[in-house]
Image (cartoon, rainbow, N blue to C red; front, side):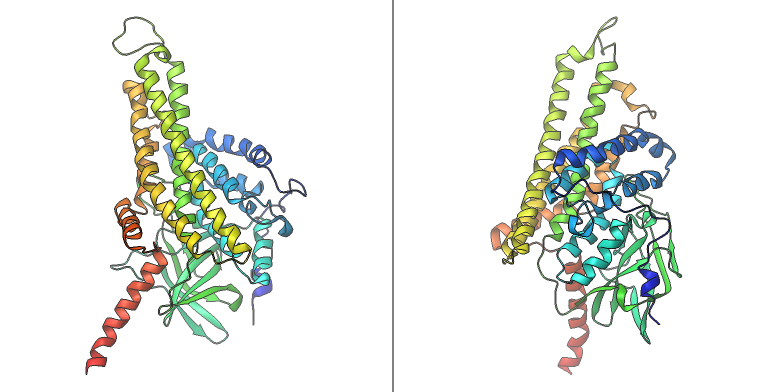
Length: 435
């Protein structure tokens, strides 16, 4: 028996539907006015959450209640209808409040973006209606295995499937109402959605990274979880790599937006810290560091680094939006997808380097007092370094060079997994072909 009526009923724990801003597409000022008070509340508790490692359930609830998860959902479906550039500008502001939050909602926004690019109207209506009511999606994609592969399995069981295995780096899943997972069924990679409270699902808070500690990027276990047809999102054969899209750039830009937010927070805290000080290193008596040319130089550098990060994020967002708009009009956007992905890789090289510089330069304006655990300025470097580690620069830099020298488009994690599985399959079949 199909469980669809139960699966797609509104979660009683989810708040009311999104209240629209109006019948016209929203301006950035309107969107910012809606969310900035929430961002301010999130920022107020950032240090306390970091000190006690308190997961951001309250902050996520505030965002859900305000309709942040429906930011990109078109107004025709009850969402806010924000553009891609507007979305990433808001994510920078959210990252300034707490860099954990953009990463927490990253998988959710990617899920929405994939529905926006789907031609299945029934699929869009089904999922958008849940999102408008407050549903939040986490991800269970990556695994801690010896190779780049997928070991989670999906097995046919009559009219249903059974999902078994476990994932790690399940960012945002601990806060979610639904989990988007990838499993292997024969030679197909299957993307599917599972209610976070489904029987057989266990979510563990075992992420032990020294930064982005509140993202819930730990283990998700699936034990004999029943999956219905309505939960299957898509299939990709090992022998048929996925089509080109802007999703590589999109995923990367979430990290870059969080990093740009960190750079803004560093500048903000450096200014506040400097203005409040009444003494300067090696200067007798009371003095005002804000008038010290050396301190001014550091603040000037921090402002410039933050500006650069913001500008690069805006540029990549515009490139993604250009490809999205072209595809929406029915044009072949393949070259635009590649251009957006390459720009995201290039921006990554600069944003990471400069934000890490900013998180270190912050301490040049404060002396030993800037290292106080009451301020937790160290979290900026730890969070930036952790975000930078997810997609190593050296691999992306090589891919950029390969593109400019040989025209090779960059590819994402799923393509890498498929390539690895295809190579393993060919290696296993080689003895049979030669015998």
